[in-house]
Length: 409
Image (tube, rainbow, N blue to C red; front, side):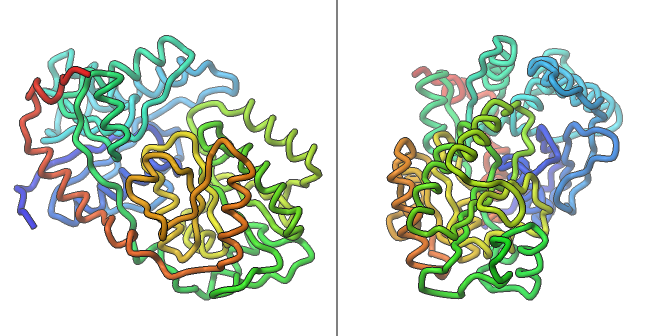
């Protein structure tokens, strides 16, 4: 493995809450720190907030004034950009960073401002996925964050291709990873207690761990991670779950996560309406359980408690939750589209057409019937230490190589 001179690296993320991009920053930071580099994690946060997961890295939070409910998206994004920019400007008065690396448009726009002021030489931007925003100002910020970066990275070939075709920009692909110690298929003594505390299992069902192998459980648990969002396809997952319950009437759908900067109120309201129309009660111990953000220590137990992870997303950067579920011995249903098709094979996951609720239901039914499994080999191909080494090699590449960085479509 190549050795790299120790660097001072700042990793910027938009939030301290559990989202895929934030997980990437925390785990990449941990791996870079373990490789001998000095890593500082920077994010906007209101008073009293902290990262949802402990980290060995230095943490420097940009003070953020809490936004009132109903705040326009552009105003909320502007507040985060301003907070990060002001915080970094103060940091840079007494601290030098060899690498300034943003993982979203909020941090990248703060860095673009500092670059325009001549306070920094440039920044790295990782693209997890590119959103399309109805608000023209927010969309302009998103595009600027890509255009002004001196080095672009992305987590899948899909987004490398889209950056080239849709934006005329070239990027290097870097992999996500999974921690096989944290996400393990080995049952833990506290698993059942975590499941009970989270309100899993139907109210009249025995609060017991899932079967270790084989067989169709009487009350299968379908888990989806990421909250209720259009791109996560949560409503179609609900429709598929309703079909599954026709054959498995004791099945339960558990929705975890949802701490997003974006407003998904309309999608949440539609989800509740569709659940009511299907006769699916929502609440602890009911057919549908909405957990919201789950304490980080409970996530491995939650994965192990599930019979199948449902991730028939319409848009993903990588699909990290599927890899984590597989590492925990839980089967995963994913969309037969990129980026899933880039790193999963037919023996790794159960495929579904994300636009067809019947297809999703069939895949869920097949996964439940087969029971738990040993983690597939794909889990061992994605490690954070390897990801960190790849990042370090790219950090050392020429950042003003305009031929690849401004490649035409």
